[in-house]
Structure formats: C-alpha cells, structure tokens
Amino acid sequence: MTDFQDHQIRDRIKIEYMYTMGGQSKFFIELMKNKKLLGTKCKKCGKTWMPPRINCSDCYEPADWIELKQTGTIEVSTIVWYTTSAFIKAVPYGIGFIKLDGAETALFQGIFSENLVPSKIKKGKRVKAVFNKEREGKMTDFFFVPEDEYENWISKPEFEGGM
Ligand SMILES: [Zn+2]
Image (cartoon, rainbow, N blue to C red; front, side, top):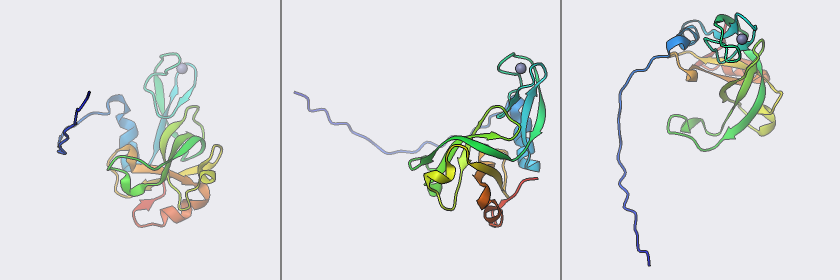
C-alpha cells in the first residue's frame, strides 16, 4: 500500500548574471544598433548561414559576415498557447523556422499576426521582420509578421521597420 503525499512549496530564485555572445556578438550588435540581420557566408563552399555560423558547419572553414534581406519564407510553424512568464502576454503567437531571402538555412523566430490563424503562418507564407524601438541586442528585439500586415505593425508606437 502506498500513501505517499508530495509536499510542495512555491518559492522564487533570482539570479543576476552576464553572458557573452562570443563570436556571434556582431549579429546582436548590428541588430540592436542598426536593425540589420547579419548572416554569414562560407569562404570555401559559399553556403549562407542564418543564424550565422562563424565557421561553416558543413566544411568547417571560416565564414564572412553578410547582410541579409529582412524578408523571408516560412519553412514550418506552429501556434504557441503555453509558454514562460516572459512571453505569456503574447499568447497566442506563432513561432517557426524562417528562411530569409538569400540564406540557405532557417532561423527560429516568433511570427506575430493581428489575425492569428494557422493559414496565416503556414509553410510558404512570406514574412517580414519588425523591430522593437527599444532594443537590447537580444533575439526578442525583432519578430516576423505576414507581409500584408507589415505596414500596420510598423505604425504601432513600440515597433519600427528595418533598414
Ligand atoms: Zn562551407
């Protein structure tokens, strides 16, 4: 016979820390300061990486920084209903892998829509990057929206278009 009863106590942990983006720092600095989306291009095989890789993951040769377009195509997506406290106010929202024009790999990023239904963010749909006016050099500084909603999103006071 089992009469185990789990006793749980809710508590909170606060940890302040710093971390470095290392070789990827240029991506985050250009995102924050200039609203640019930088990828990298392998010096040997020419593959274009986004998210950027300092060294090509196919042939291990160094890659050069290149600026990519801020438009792309959804490769795969889903709608988020359960998330962490950091994103709870945005629920429901889309996330997905987006292949920026000119890149050969896809970036995992948020996809927001004013009318979020699966057909709005399905594979093959065109999206464009929208940036927070207040940027910190983090992935949450930008997100993607369906191309036909772009003008509406950048007219909101907290957001703006890219370069
Ligand atoms: Zn390569």
